[in-house]
Image (cartoon, rainbow, N blue to C red; front, side, top):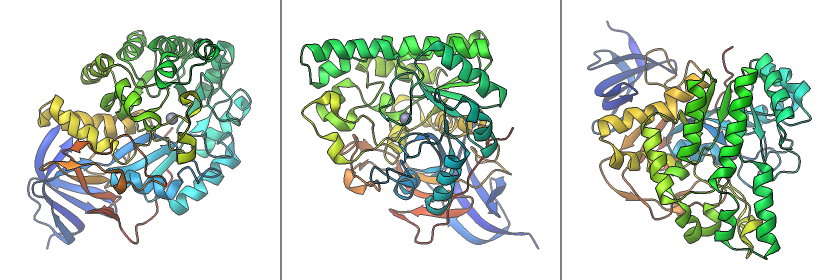
Length: 455
Ligand SMILES: [Zn+2]
């Protein structure tokens, strides 16, 4: 008698970075154990995935769920539920916007405890890298931080200080490298941005266009240039988050050719929206670096297709509606909410850029396999025997219209309302348990696990 599996997903188009092929997927004890064109085993449960794509669980290394301390902005329960609705199975929460920010072991433990109680997906945590906590990096490494994040410009959060001088960033990278921590940077040059803001304010500017002009691409390039130079000098692993321009990706590619250990993240909004959208939509499409020109948006796609982007993170960064309303665009809280709709929409748009046989494997790399590799999560990132059974079932057969009314966020705001989308997330599974099914979170969805990078 053949062995009994927990679950077989039959007849779906299984997506891996190597290609798409019709296969049966066998799952036992939370892992993929058998993947073959036709499984003869029996299973306690079978699902028919004919006509659907079996896509690896999306790994989102860049979210701000704001818990503890600012749960009125989002929270781990709503944030992780929205991620699951968008096909995501793991997130890594940024160290700031939660209070206290994650700058040492006690704050790391406090957030871990909350996430283990509330998150329906697996998770990891970023630690912070601020001028005051260089001595706490070993304890963050020991606690299992995915890496540490530094701001090269103001973070907007009072209890999370930026590192604007090269000497401190160099020292931070040296310390991080010594304890095996990767450093992520928000790369915008504080001095350049501030002087542009001062000039705009001096003439009384409050409008969207004037704000966009305070963060030209040169502000991003100056900071990326400095960060990659210091990473090369200190042999620190560097991850540049939310690169918004093809020029920024070129700078990083050049550093990699010189042997610098650096990777580039971009976000769906830089690929799906442009600065016209900020002018049209206002606050829900304000972020830093800002959305770029249509020409740069297209250039970013090209650069990403050419392999210059390594990971895609949502940078889901919500705030209460009151903070998104002001006549003065400069004072509106920045951040785009996108963890639910942006990934399906990105998959949908990629299908218009590339044939599906290329688009889907390419995104399986950027949204899953590359993330697991870069952040040393060997059990994650692919539909492959031995890995955690994290996947979604995607329906690409019909067009839907995205609606903010369907958002599971604490605040139903986002820039994709009304967009046509050819990708619908039917189900999401984490470690062999279904957490999202045709429009709702499973009533008894299990809670996620903390993942620590392997050393
Ligand atoms: Zn962010």
